[in-house]
Amino acid sequence: MLRLLSKQERLIVWSLALIGFASRVALVFRTDWEIATRPYIEDAFYALSCARQLALGHGFSIDGIHPTNGVQPLICLLDAPCFWFSDDRWVGVRLTLVLAGVIQLLCILVLARLLAQIRVANPNRVGSRAGSTDPSTSSGQALHVTAPIVGAFVWAIAAPLLVHNVNGLETGLYALCILICLSVYHSILNSGWSTLRAIAFGVLLGLTVLARIDAVLFVASFAAWELWRGRTRAIQPVLTFGLIALAVSAPWWLYNYHNFGSLMPISGQSEGLGKPIVENLLQSAAALFDMLTVFFYHRFYSWDTWVTVAALAGIAIIWGYFATRFRVAATGLRAAQSLTPVVLFSLALLLYYNFFFSAPHFLARYLHPVRILALIGFCMALPSLLVCSGRICRVGIYFWLLAGTVFGAQRYLNDFTGEGTSDFYAMGQWANKHAGRIGMGQSGTAGFIASNIVNLDGKVNPDALRARKSGRIGEYIAREHIEYLADWLLIVDPLVRAAHDAGVEYQRVDSVGYLLIYRRVN
Image 1 (tube, rainbow, N blue to C red):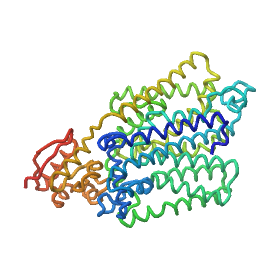
Image 2: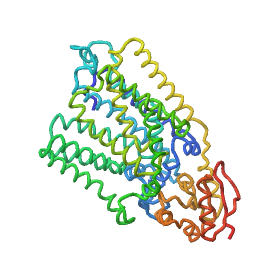
Image 3: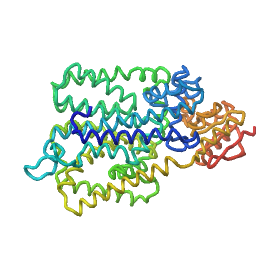
Image 4: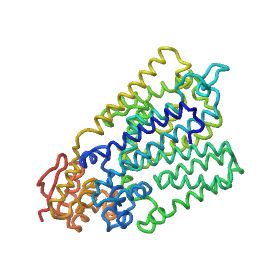
């Protein structure tokens, strides 16, 4: 896999890959409560519940009874074997962290290979002085900072990648699939299409779709670019890899349509109710700013609107300056061709999630491919900047790298080794001590712990989704004889009022952290 790297580069890349693996696996020693707080997020426990039910032979289901498609299928299938080894569900959760470590290791290796492939396609250092060569291609010299080393370093220690790739959801697996597709596509561009290569590439694209279904836009981006690049010569390979990708992902589409009457998962339909375009654009700007900093992230909603917009404009100007001043954008035709599909994919994601979706708080995760693209650009540019820029600029770059390393270490120590405080974990414990069904909008963690939790936001409960769409969630609550309603105030209060309109009264009786609990009184 790493034969394009020098011996020194392979040693460093493997060392960083093992550090990345160890940092993920070390999290298995956290308590159940702590794991439910960090690194795994609330929605992760929908996927973990499905994985556990798959291991028990109940299919895609949260409770083992009612089918659902409100998850991404491939991560559930890969997580399912983790629940074969013990009746203790938390043993299975810990084993999924080992799987996350393996995915992390593979991401680092594949990214280093991809960057080495791009380097081979562009032997002259980007932005170099005339006649100079890339020092990374020299032998017998002191080790230089090279794109593969930068990529491995960033992927191993960057705090945003830790947050998004080890959250219990599909994001890390999705990133791995994207990187593999880009690496294989780059090889195909060098070797040319053949039927066997098109079939293998179609399998990879199909698995990427199963990792996250919005990757259908990824497939479409490759098809569009190949048709534009090759015209009629590209029709056969495009048809081949497109049909194979469809065949690989077809079982999920058929399952969705047969059981739920739609190709769109119910989680996507739930998140698509309402379209706060202005807020989407604002949170996209915040997410893009973080991505362009490479190493850093901030709490969304914590900055004023003008600060977010100004910050994004400022860092975009900085990137543009370096790209123009040192010609780091001139990466060569072969590299541009291999990365163009992910550029098109990123633009498609920005368009779709800003104007046709309604989950601004999740945009940093939905736009993860954009982060991958920004990271690749950074890794390709940094070696040239360190060689071509002046002393002050180099000092600034090294300070940025040091600050990113410190931030990543601090976030890891603070966010992923701190004590558990998850209200949803505590809510699951509360539910286990109380008879009666408990309705929650956010039911991932509590539902993983307690079997009497009912999902009410429709992400994994098709009946609740239909009720929300028709404006009859109150009638659904009444009909299902839900004894308790619990959630954050902004979520549970509308449920209580909807139940009131349906003739059912609830009275507040308890709270768990920020979760308010109401009990039915008639």
